[in-house]
Image (cartoon, rainbow, N blue to C red; front, side, top):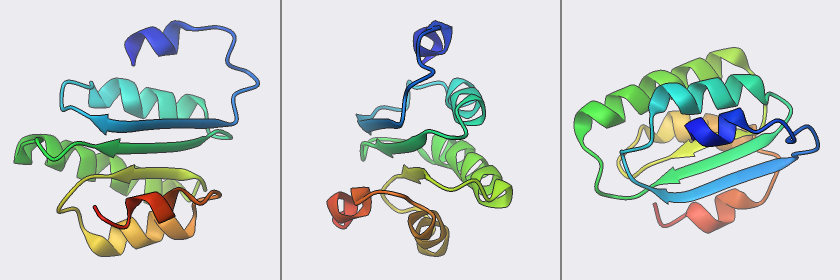
Length: 103
């Protein structure tokens, strides 16, 4: 994610999807990416092998996304708060949520 943030030619980016992410992804870098690309639909799903501490960090980022009311940002992981997931889904611009019903 740090290397993606360094790219300068993403001004035409409309959709960014990232699936089956391990917890090695730096949450701070993901947060910076989400804030930098507010007009880009961002959909990130994590694999099932993430620990509670990492889930807590994701929850904090999810809270920021919900509070910002910027549409089109979706973060998914197994066992997350269903109400918050539904809030993010309702703001999603794509059909990505059809692919994540099994999470």
